[in-house]
Length: 183
Image 1 (tube, rainbow, N blue to C red):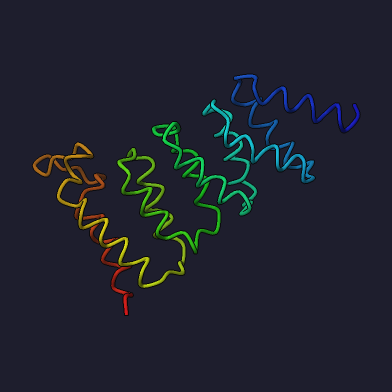
Image 2 (cartoon, rainbow, N blue to C red):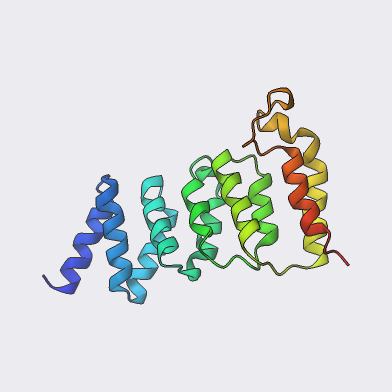
């Protein structure tokens, strides 16, 4: 099979609906490489099918392909993708998010699922960030506006709290941890 024929076959497999076939195809396209194939994979982050977006995102995660950081953030923040971003946020864990502290907190604060919140907190725990006082002030201000409603918005009941709940106290500890760096 010629390289062009293989590439066209792989692109067809990505829309197959079969998860294993889809992920094998995105991984192989990345492996083949070339700007055209990588651009195609990045373009999949705009696909209307969440499985297609997720297959591409996991390929970028597996390969620690940091050039996908901005396209992933753009796709995560699209309102039409809301509720279908957990895998894409998971993909961010292996990318260098050092200059995206404010963006990560914005995703955390945007009434996302437990899965999304968990992945954001993992990134905040595991990576080192660059930020300005203005970034920290903006994070603090947004949190101050939101914290009174956090538990209600996330359907958390303090009386029946579970160990794994991502409640206002936990989020406050993350905000405080970063805000403590303000000069």
